[in-house]
Length: 490
Image (tube, rainbow, N blue to C red; front, side, top):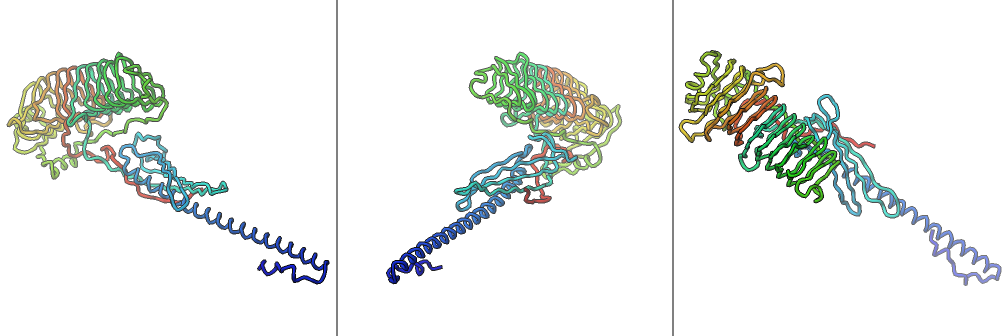
């Protein structure tokens, strides 16, 4: 309607006073109609604009929610031992609108049971939920909001090496006067899937990780971190150079022992060393989580494992495999024949190997696989010629026993068991491992049950190459997600 044409000048109505009054009334009514139509047009235009804005924000919210899903894929891949449980990112902009998303990830084990975060096991699936919202439209309360979810299978990528100085699938305890030095700085980590205890005069050039209780006593000192479910002490006067975490309980550390880093606990913290908690370094009643879980690596004595040792790798020469079950001569042959061979040699035997107190030198790399256990006396092992690097493996195979934990076949060293600096030793058993008085060690120790270190033990951590480890039993270093579905939910 053209309101300008309807508003006829009053001068055209000259018939008389009555006609002029009617014309004025018609003009007023016409103006009212035009104003009403204009208001309707504005309202329709505003409604259309708002509807367009809501649609635009909803589209942005969908895209932002999908971005949350995609970011979760990347975070899972890069999460290592502990992939994330939540993600958030603000200020995703598109034109005049701003969106932010929040993402939660629920992990499931092989039985389909949800797993607590941070993870202490290996998940097989993850459900990712990402909710995105946009800014409020001007003049109203409408916000674009969308939720996406995705179910993914998780394929673990396992490490290719064993990284701890000492690993115990059972308890790990140190009696007195232990010194463990690192291979490259404070990297001599010790790990246990049970409780950890150090009594006195213990120095660790690495971190202490425990899936149980960590008990510090005397001058127990570490150059890195301490992380257990509960951390406590008994007349402790040592030092922790890094942080202390109690993932499922309290921290109790008293003066004069000191902690250089922060303290985190899921419940209470009692710390009186140094400046105590007054410096703002204590964070009780939080969620620090448990230490990253590591499984016990599996090294069997079966044909497939021995074939891996025989084949070697691009960097590790293959071993000559010798099977010797003559128990009356096995020790003498190890010392005089197999250790003197021209090529790396693996001796597989069902006999107990008691090396006694006779020193001998290695002219090659030597691996002893014994299902009968291994003991040593007051002896030293060296390399020939001196200064030539040799690798020595003492292994009780995983399949030597039907069940674990186990106390036998034994892996036990008597006092004054030592090596020259050119021999690296890898000790492995699914059962208990004991080091007795005045022993030294260069290399690594992996026990499938309890590991007990007694008085005057000196160790230098050096990674020792190991063949034939079941890859599924190595620590997971990352996960590769493969999508099952992705969809929008309410």
